[in-house]
Length: 275
Ligand SMILES: NC(=O)c1ccc[n+]([C@@H]2O[C@H](COP(=O)([O-])OP(=O)(O)OC[C@H]3O[C@@H](n4cnc5c(N)ncnc54)[C@H](OP(=O)(O)O)[C@@H]3O)[C@@H](O)[C@H]2O)c1
Image 1 (cartoon, helix red, strand yellow):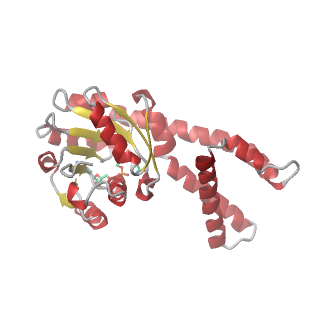
Image 2 (image 1 turned 120 degrees about the vertical axis):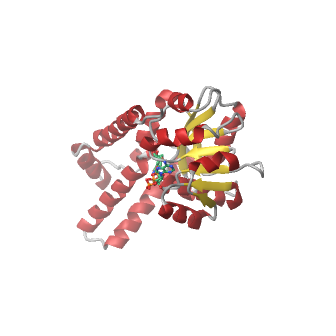
Image 3 (image 1 turned 45 degrees about the vertical axis):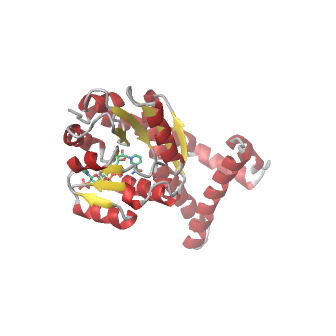
């Protein structure tokens, strides 16, 4: 990463903090190469304590100091943010937006002509170097811009390029996915407790089961169906559990969760004013 590159986070909330910490832990950037702006003094304080980076209260200050601007506010704040940044954004800037649902065309329309824009959807495991990220480039982003985004987000996990029309689906799956997975861990834990396990024992077993299964899938490249069948002996315990999941509509419920979250992301992008 170029030593003079500075990344400016507009909005220093949870995702900005997770990403900044991830980039620092991966030694891709030093704290002096990160800057954050946020109207909330509390959010600025938390961000600077978590990252050691400099923070400012006014978004307008960022384009002077940072060549890469990361818009990390809620989608409904993207419009006012772009208005503030507009004057300072030049062809030397790359604007990365992680706001759910907001299309590159709307970002480009609110910025000066020819602005270089990339839309990215990461997730919170960036904090531990295990994010799942997808991105798509705007009309004027260069190959070098895409390479920079790939390098940044590869340092905090998996990064895939997708068509922009699929970005809301990514939001519904991996953007929101950590919450679904935590819900599953809670359910596994409660099931263990219902069967008599102490809660802490049940929680640790549940989390490790998730981690171990995910690692097996990643490290062996095994298909989930193959792994499922490996642990499902005829007439055994697991098939009983799987039957209960099927009867409870588990598969369809998770599919629906992804779909409704993707639809919500789409609606957020439509209603987020960028003018
Ligand atoms: N959290 C996730 O798992 C996740 C995953 C992928 C993508 N995202 C996307 O990341 C974005 C941020 O999400 P988040 O969870 O990090 O939200 P968050 O924790 O609420 O962070 C947003 C921050 O932006 C601040 N802000 C509000 N208006 C601003 C303005 N005009 N200029 C600068 N900063 C402003 C907020 O301050 P106030 O609190 O005072 O309003 C808050 O500190 C969203 O668009 C979301 O779609 C989130």
